Figure 1 (cartoon, rainbow, N blue to C red):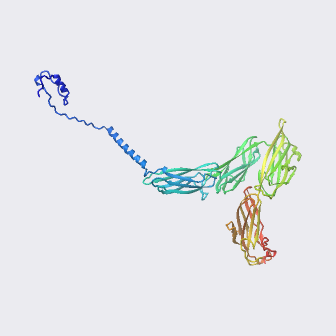
Figure 2: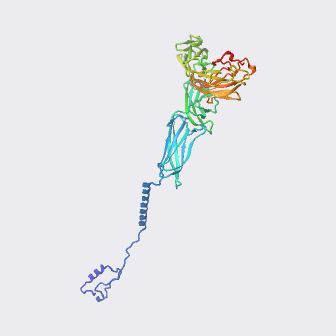
Figure 3: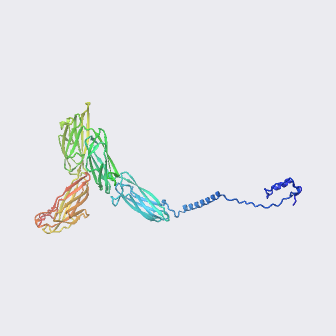
Length: 624
């Protein structure tokens, strides 16, 4: 269509500018020589241009979309596992329950009950239970065997299954210690090589130490004068304790002169202590120091190290003894039955000889010196006290030596000495239990110092006497009485056997007796039949030594015990008209638990003269 003539060139330019298919690169019109007739008067159809409107996706966008998808999938899987938990294994689903005592004495057997429960929805495999025990723990089956750890493979545990194990151990420790027993369960899961751990712990209090130690000595000592320490080690355990050591730490200025048990360095090996056993170690030495100085002796008891004979692997108890060094002015020594020990023993009813000696150890005179020995104890017989160069004040049971009884005590020159003697007896009868006599020696006097001012001085020393229990052993024979049926002629006939019942009666008095044993030998013409009462094996016979032994065990204070056995007697023709011995004189031994000494006693021989038998007559004793 031809352009309209009346359309201006400006209008045509405007239309061309806003045309949708405008070719931007079209050349500009040349207005210089073109004829107006060459210009078109209408829009021409331009070729269609197709534009590509799709842009390429950037890498960051692709990564963000991938991360978002992965997060959604992972969150979904985690939520499923968390909410369903159908196949998960967790240590929180394993329960370990422990039951046992909360407090025991050191050295006692500790019974533990351990229950393991699997609360997981799947089974666990290779479950291993482990209990770690403190150092020094021993096996309950054999206390000589160390038990540092208990371990057992429980195998597989099904879902909801429980397993209970009983564990026993002998645990040692100091009194008041808190002992922790770590408990560990390691296990696996099916289709997994991972190992899971469940831990727990059991607390136990040690009420008393299995081994205790006590020290008895003077609270004051004179420099350069011998001093004795009595150290007592006692087993409080209910089972034997092996490898017991006593370790001594001596203060500065103390030198050992003698010990009752040979030490290894400063360590005393005591071996194995049975329940209730006691070991006493006496240590004597010289203590040097200045007046007013304090010295501390320290003793520790425990079990020895397997690698070092002089070292403790486990200490049970430590006991200190404090001694103050005092300046001597009137050196006094008390001797009882020839012993200067501050702790001694004596038999009930036996006389006790005492002697007290004194000496002025100062460089100046001592005036108005007096020595008083106060006697105390329920076993004292006041009427038996005798004093030489002194007198007995019965109002308070005190032996007195002073200037009135011995004029030399009115004034003692430097280095001057004297001696006083006395004696007394103890009661042998009565319901005495663990009887002890105490002698408290008090020394007093007046010394004149360098400024000539009188000065009163005094000192005290305590000695104890433990009375040993008295044992009575009665031995006799029976024919028509007793628990056994005796056979044979009565009175006995040569070449014919007659059986008899032998009776042993033991009566204890003041103190408990431990490990009592009675034994006697049989003559060659007497046969042990094997019948015994009690029939618990306590009465035995050794055919090699022909010795009958009765293990009576512990006998309480004031208690009695009896044993019987049967023998066969075949007299020879050369024994006719006589009363042959059937059982030789028996002897009894035991340990006095209070006095801590071995006690012995003896019975009489048993012959065919059985005056305790109801059917006895003088003509039934001699061999026919």
